[in-house]
Image 1 (cartoon, rainbow, N blue to C red):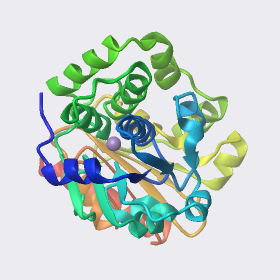
Image 2: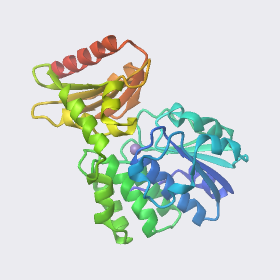
Image 3: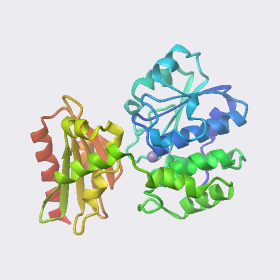
Length: 327
Ligand SMILES: [Mn+2]
């Protein structure tokens, strides 16, 4: 088992009386689950805590215990009381904190725990492990560092964090440490079957309708080694979908026989084009995301650019085609 040896982080947490916990915009299971587990740990250590997110918790994660304590950015700003420490989770850069960034920066000290390789280390104390499968796994290590065994509700939150970021323990980031962690979480006694169904099987109708529209736009290029899909505001309207309903859709392009790299383009937000990129080994889409002002992992990355859609799509297709021919 990997351990957290970052004494600066441990003592910052140990010495703080009040901790503000936040995570990235458009939070996913790892962001929400890690926050809730970290919050529970810190409260069990006698800290006064507050949690906030720039965007609402997606409905599918609202069942997680403690969600009702997560503040909006406005609530966090209004109740901001000079925290001893602000802790950012799963946020690859400070901008990813969105509108809670100013509360984060207003604390006397800042720290972060994250597993994105592109993370520049924007806090005063940084615990970054690009090999960790998820931030959830790092929170589990943090619990161990403080001699705290995950309790049932914490285990449910961490299971949600880890299983979402590993594609239900399938992605290449899933390692022995991930299963060691999962084993301990399951031993804590939460209802695995019910939680797994909520996190991995249940779909909202709006998501499935949006998926249908994305699949209708599917096109293959680079001799079938790359695939792309596109969604527009009209698709969201027709499907009755919100932005969170596009989560995971890009994988339908990647998981086609012969496809090595895939993108989902999205022009739903006026004035921008957003991309999700996916690849299988040994390809790399993190450089592509960085080229367009985004970031992420080797096999899963994304960006949001003000470039005209046609120009951005050309850059993406050219990069993927060259990458496919190069390897
Ligand atoms: Mn994550």
